[in-house]
Amino acid sequence: MNDDHRSFLPWPAVWGVFLVFVVFVLSTGGAEAAVPVETQVANNKFIFNTFFLLICGALIMWMCAGFTMLESGSVRTKNASVICLKNIGLYGIAGLMFYIIGYNLMFVDVSGWIGAVKPLFRPSADEFAILAGSEKAGAAVIGTDYASVAFWFFQMTFVATTASIVSGALAERVKLWPFFIFIAVLTGVIYPLVGAWTWGGGWLTKLGFSDFAGSTIVHSTGGWAALAGVIVVGARRGKFREDGSVKSTPPSNVPLVTLGVFILWFGWFGFNGGSMLVLKGSVDAVTMSNVMVSTNLAAAAGCIAVLFSAKSIFGRVDLLAVLNGAIGGLVAITAAPNIVEYHWAVIIGAIGGLACAFGLKMLENWKVDDVVGAIPAHLFAGIWGTLAVCIAGGGNLFAQIVGIVAIGAFVFIASYVVWMILEKTMGLRISSAAEDLGQDSAELGLEAYPEFVLMPDEDDARIAKGAQ
Image (cartoon, rainbow, N blue to C red; front, top):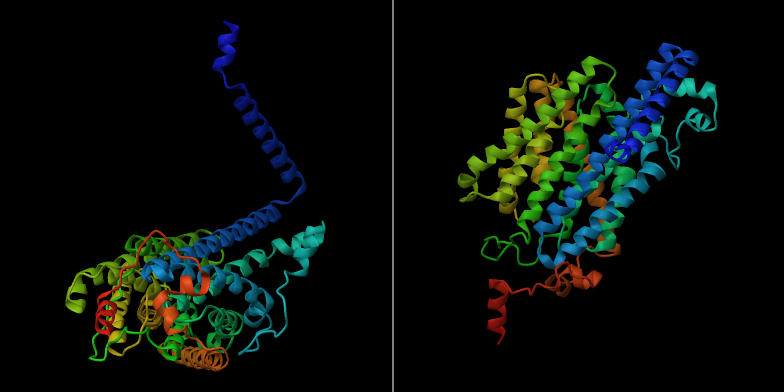
């Protein structure tokens, strides 16, 4: 009977719970005895806000996986491995460049146009001291809202997002190493200067420019950089025929593209929600709830708006356009997701989705080859979202227009110059033979789908038949 009784009770679990309870009571009692209540409250807020930023930064980092899935599914199978390499490579480059120079340019001693031109991000002296056991430094640290390292990590993931936008637009024809060099300049210099003007407290902030989470600062910056690259590199060979028609290049993996969009949608809650930076009380908590709800409503509205209008725009219900419509809605609301009246989020998101859809068609008419629709989704919808702040977010129209024009002109011109320098010195385009064979085999010697047998498309088959 005793044996049965012992086997019935989970004694290790009972003792474990008891010990945890004892430790909790003792630690709580000790804290209350040794630390004033005000200090304990400040300490708890510091811990919570730091943890909040780190988690939101991790969500944004996960968006890089979304971009990778979207892009690798959008390109032809012969180029999927290179896309994967570019996306993980650009994330590594963004992290290092923002550590080496970018953060200081963006946030340290910003004079109005530029921050500190000095290498290597460093946490505050108090944070170094607290790790060495300084009680005085501990009091100083918890007096701030969050750890400076957590803020660096959060902002670094924004830089990587900007870089990811460029990758998809230039897919299937730009060389690997010149692309990486451009990403280093973009994440180390171009983007941080835009950030210094705005989030760093520079001249656009003083003018009244408002961009809550980066419709222009992040997304339009990536869009302008991509547009400059697409113009310099040119379209994929055979994309636009001599008679003016567009050669269809369907994605290699539609489910992968869809998965990528869902991952981006998920990560966007960290992107917009984390831009609250701190949650000091009930007002901030309610505001963050509004941010999350508005973000989701805008994405849904962008998706549905394109779903119902795709047939009139493209002549069919276009899944890829619908997916981009959701991204367009997300980009558009990013400038003011903290609005209170949710119907504005629906309107802003729907127009953002439609701006993306019409933009896709417009770029084709202009013979601009954007493989994944990154420019309409991030540039066009980003401009609209930044202007929409004036409708629902209390923005100043003059300041918003000046910000859009100034950032657009700077990023496009700077990016165009960098792309042209790379073109003249290294060459940007892969060879015609490499383009036919695919970058996976030509540059990596590694096919993403080695079991697949690639069949020639109609144009290639026609050319081969004519050559016989």
